[in-house]
Each structure stands twice: as structure tokens, then as C-alpha cells.
Length: 330
Image 1: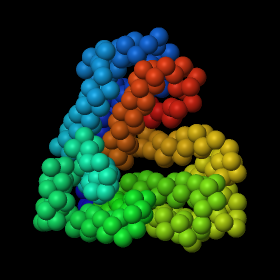
Image 2: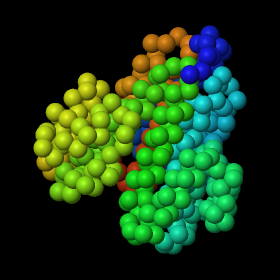
Image 3: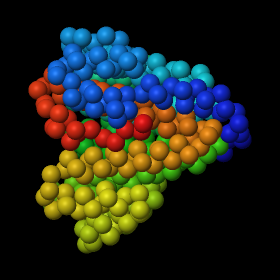
């Protein structure tokens, strides 16, 4: 565990508290939802530092959102006393890129368009390692996971199984990185994220009348709910298996979804549970918790903005958009 003291976060925490006011937040998101059309919704984003996206194509939206994500991760990496905080958030983009490359080998190769530049490893470097089977510039755990996923896909022709292996490697790395910090706040977030991933897998397996063996393969170790307990959903109610207070509402909606109710409310509540955990950082005056929550909030802001704008372009009305929005950190 790091020996960095919380006082070393005084400047960054003050800086973040000042910047939080510029986040989209509930009020501005509601303004975007209520906007008459796409271009009116875009005007709200400009108040939060986004470039003018009036009339922007979908490709331009993706370009701007990707650049914003890369910019804030780079900024936080420079300012954060513990760089591992940013590393923890970069991991998922490494594993996203791994999935793109592995699947691209067995189908149409549009990986160049889908690769993210927000991981630890530049996408060009990862692609070159993949095509040349030369892994010196790739972190060992990621490299081993990619090789294993490649073998799994070649053996089974099942991309879902390949993804499961990559997901397990991702969470294994996330827990390892979180464990090096001076706080257990990120470790708690990682464990809750694993619980929610396992809850989602359990609900889908029961709902789809899938074989228990698939859930046993998919379940990820390291959460607060053990893999053995997760698999009890084949004999117990979801609400009994996932009894943790943080998961209570998710489990209640998950039970209904497993019985055939629409998944939307369940999926939304799963994301809301993670945001609720992060709000604990608001009680901290200064420290790594503030940085963790802020990076997560910035990522959620991009997801929400993208969803609203694409929804506006697709003709979704305010109520339909609200049903898709998650609780905001601010």
C-alpha cells in the first residue's frame, strides 16, 4: 500500500471541488433533455467546456468525446500524487482494445475505428504486438490475457468465452492496482463493480434459462459476494444471494428482470449503485477519494452527454431520455 498522505492531495482536492461546478450535473442534463432539438441540447454542453457541436455528425461526436476523455485523463495523471488512480481507469480501455483485436481476427476488421487511445498502451502499439505476436511493450497480465483469449476463440469460435477471460484479467488487474493506493476507497469501488457485473450475469443466465455452467464460467472472483454464492441463484432468489445493502435495490429489480420484467430499470439501478458509492467522497475534505470520484464522474458525464445527443438525433422524447439517464454525481 502507498505511503502517500492525504495532505498531499490538498491542492488537487481544492482544484477538483472548483471544477465540479462545471460538470454537467442533474440540472444541465435536464436542460439537455428538455431542449427542443439536437442543436439546442448542444448549447448546454458548451457551458461545460465542450467545443461547439452544432450540426456535428456522429463521427464528430465520437471524436470530441474521445478527445475530452483523453485530455482529462492526461491532466489528472499530471496532477495526481498517486498515478495508479488514473491507471485504474485506463485499464478498461486496454481490455476494450484487446476485445476489439481478438474479435477482429475472426470477422470484419474495423479495429482501427473502434480502438481507444485512453488505455495505458497506445492502440498502435497494442495492434502491432497483436499482429506480430511480440509482447515486450505490453504489460504481462494484459499480454497473457490476450493470448489466452485468442486461443479460446480459435478453439471454440465463441467470442463470449474469449470476452469472459479478458474480463477476469481486467478485474484482477484493477484489484491489484487499487490495492497499491493509500486508501481502500478504490478497492471498495472495484469490489462493488465486480458484484454488479456478477449480478448482471446471474440475472441474464436465469432469465435466459441458460446452463449453470455458463454462469460458473462467467462469474468474476474478487467481489464482496463469492463466486460460489453467486451461482446459488439457480436455487435461491436473487434478493437472497445479493443481500448486501449497497445491492439491495439492484437485487430487487434483478429478481423481477430474471422473472421476465424489462431489463432497463435493473440496468439503470446497477449504474446508480456505483454512483451512490462514489458520493461517499463528498464527505472527504481532501484525499485520494476525491480524485477517484471525480475521474468516475467525468467519465459518466461523457456517457450521459453522448446518450442524450444521440437520443435527440434519433427522435427520442424527454420521458424516453429520462428513463435512460443515470443518477448524476453532482
